[in-house]
Image (cartoon, rainbow, N blue to C red; front, side):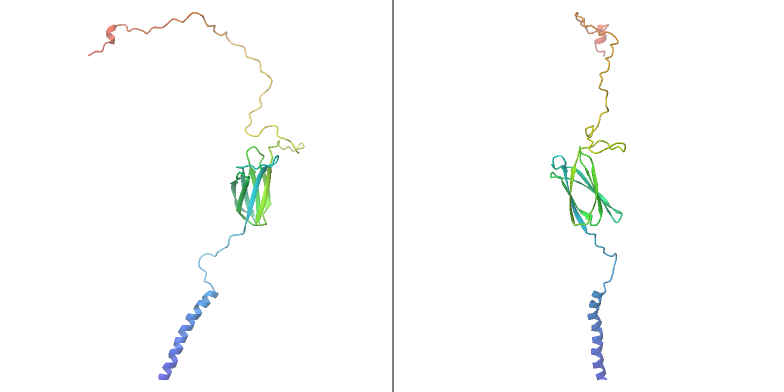
Length: 198
């Protein structure tokens, strides 16, 4: 009987230790999922837009550059960035593989808008701004027409021919050379009215 106890004790001890040792190894092989599954964010691209004047190539500062991204037909939102004194605006959160509409608005220049397919990790875009052109018409040739009006708030067109002067309704009063009479303050009718009563 003693032999039996000495044989079973180490065997029972071995059977208890083996699962404890193997448990961490099994846990590493099959992770337990708790809560939400982590989804890595999509790869992003950096876009740098340089805004310059077309006629002299100088940068335009404080121009609004609007980025409107769409990925697989889903709108990814839009963001407006102002250009710095060098005419540059940069953004680095546009998903790679998306279609981006870049719109540039600057005071005194025609609005620019163009769509770009972003497939590379970095993209540099140069936008040459022009002055506003005449309104486009489908009935005539529209190539190279300069604006007939200056940019900004427009005043209504007024006739350039001089209008007839209106006739005076009555003759103007003629100033007289005699001085006007001096006015004197009125005196109270009775001196007793000015004394205080008790």
